[in-house]
Length: 173
Image (cartoon, rainbow, N blue to C red; front, side, top):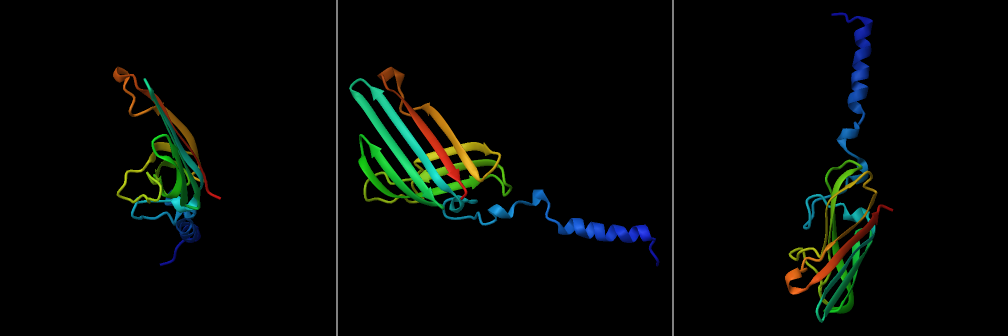
């Protein structure tokens, strides 16, 4: 069977299109995000920067302050903790940066584990100390933001008020 010349041109074009990765197939830039003991799609190893929590609770004869700064270098975490109830200390931490897709943008979440006292290490069984949820980024290479909200222990009936502020600035070097 002999094909007309126009049909022969269709075959190379179809092969060229099928061989070219489409943008919907994902980005090789994030291909090494992987499942680990902390998350199903952890991209933390790509990031450097800081995530911090500042907390203040006030009441009659009460002023509690708490500040945690997690400094991240290519996914490795070092925590500085300072608070009226715990004192000041440093220790290792853990980080999860979950991307909602393997594209270059979309939803994400961040979880940071830091020690709760000097000389201890957090484990995956602990609840993350800092959690950032339901965020969106136009470019996963730069994740940044701020969330200021009422302190979870605020109790107007007992005269307790306060705030918590979480800030994050993570970048892919």
